[in-house]
Image (cartoon, rainbow, N blue to C red):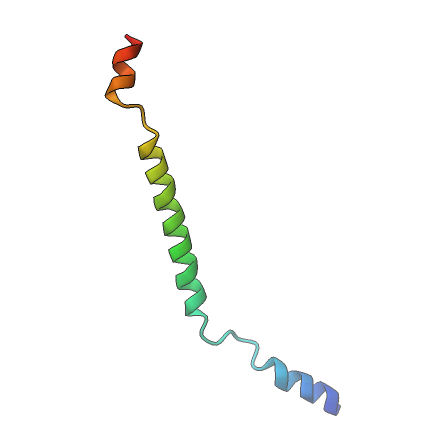
Length: 56
C-alpha cells in the first residue's frame, strides 16, 4: 500500500459514524417544534362562535 493511500485511510477512519446523537436529538426537536407551531396556527385560525352566528 502506498504512503498516500495509507494517509487517506488514516484520515477516513473506520468508516462508521462515531456519536452523532446530538444531530438526531436536534432533528427531533426541530420536527416536534414545527408540528407544534403548525397545530397552534391551526388552532388560532379556527372559526369561532361569533363567525358561525353571523353566517346564520
